Image (spheres, rainbow, N blue to C red):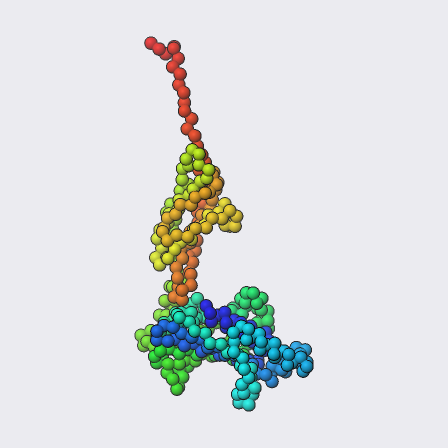
Length: 328
């Protein structure tokens, strides 16, 4: 999800440093051939920012160095940076254009459906910023900021005229729809060029695509060992799950699947796992996996059971001696 990564980086900067001094705009374009592009623009109000920076202890002498460092940081991340004047105000404008071969990459979350005639995606900006990964947990900062002061706009352009949307269709170009996205809340962006496509229909499709049934374990068998076998094996079989592209099978001697873990992937609905410890209890789980509408893996709930592997066994031969007493 390229949009999510880029957007998160932009919004973290806005929220943590420039609250009330910035606007973020993202232009999503879907081409007739199924490719697309995303054009990201952030404008920082330099006068308003200088006031905020002074509150944070940045002196006039430090201000120039601060702006130069900020500009260099964005450039190193691949953004174009320049100063623009809009309505008499001076802004630092940060932009980046990114092209993709598949329009499905132009989503804000896994809950998305994107084609050349329909754009649907769900976005939770607060969740994205709170899940900043290696940038650190910024949830405390996010919760302390009045994000209503930050303008965030998304525009979507489809190949043909848009006929249904929960956004605002452009008066000058019916192929373009604009969404004003409130930060810190969950939002749905929907637009379609098809008159018979509804928001409800798409949401049902997205929900179904992000759900997969749990497998049912039909058989789990500890296989017999040969006389000199050094290890044991287990065969697991389950029902085929509709839509599943593969299955992930995990074995462990630990119920929480932390210790002595063996992990296998298969497209079949049966597998034999070898090189296990003899006479040992193993916990087994099977998970079905499929791709959703934007190519992200969707996992079922795990089907779980336990099995104890067999040990080597020997058949003792019974030797019978015929006692003379019984001979007639």
